[in-house]
Image (cartoon, rainbow, N blue to C red; front, side, top):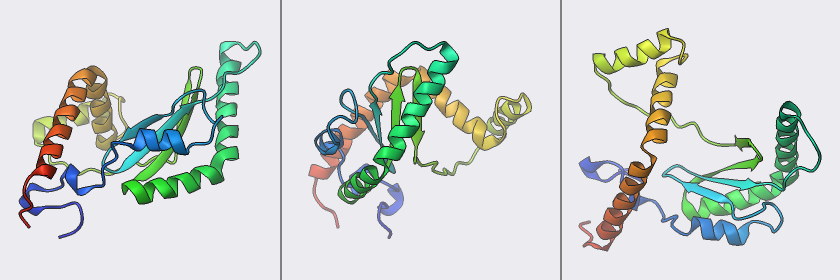
Length: 184
């Protein structure tokens, strides 16, 4: 069987290298001065996303020009740090077995770049497909895939604390599983 699969149970979190210390690793590895504080490090089974806050803009801007200036500053940071980010990502990908995505935020602007869009497979019965088709017909989404992504984002926004507790519980189960006997 390929990496990441164990019998009929499917993929298990324990099959990947632990990334519990990823935020600390990036805190130590990122160059000083890139961000105003610690970078936000978000880990899932495919990707580690690193987003930092850039130094504030100086000067007076109206709302439209402020957004343009923030976007421009993020674009400049992206270009100036490209080679260093590639090298850091290579090291992290080797260490954690996941791709690394980058982003930056400044004021009210947050931009992610080089992040993955991972396809997922699901089987839906007719009532669930009708929900997606209604979202498409109403113009909320362009396709069933977009409608499903929209629904997942909506659930994530409204169930954030519950999902956090669920992730903590799953992590504890993975820890206990890794301490158990090896059945191979």
